[in-house]
Image 1 (spheres, one colour):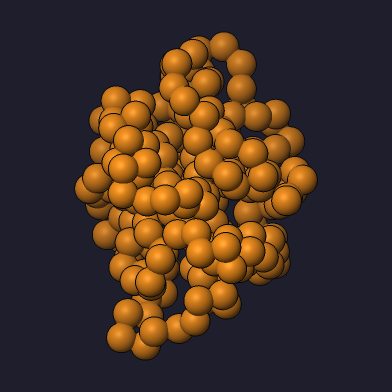
Image 2: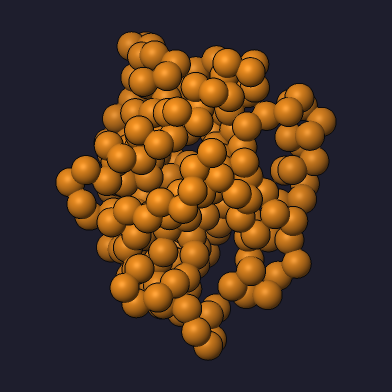
Length: 205
């Protein structure tokens, strides 16, 4: 179990610390014969809410047995299809360990931080959306300040903050999987190789 851990995404050891925390949880789940699902939640239509799809995009070529990456820029998991995807998981996996990745809003001092907890997240809570909680382990990135007009806050979030969070989180997840499951050279992909491609795909309109 992971009590609340908060890490600065621009710190040199952020990805390392994410790896160390997540790898223990992944290893315990695999020992119990549970599939690992990294569920990346968000939409590319909002800069602040694009964190999940960006992380999924960076990890989607990581192919390992019993490791599943869901949600990327081409196939985002968002408010309109979350329940559909959760139904797909329940129908196709038996007691999987779900790592939920999503953006969140917080205090001015927390912007740019990564928060890891052994508890589900409630997607869309900042926008008062009624969605089911999801995840055995949650990884959230604080992309902007909470307060009034949070929809507009997400729309006007700096892309640089989101990209730094996405890089730290995807690197941490990537190396936690390499550490616990092992490296497959045929599908060994550095999650930072496609930054320019990711930027070109984001809809900022």
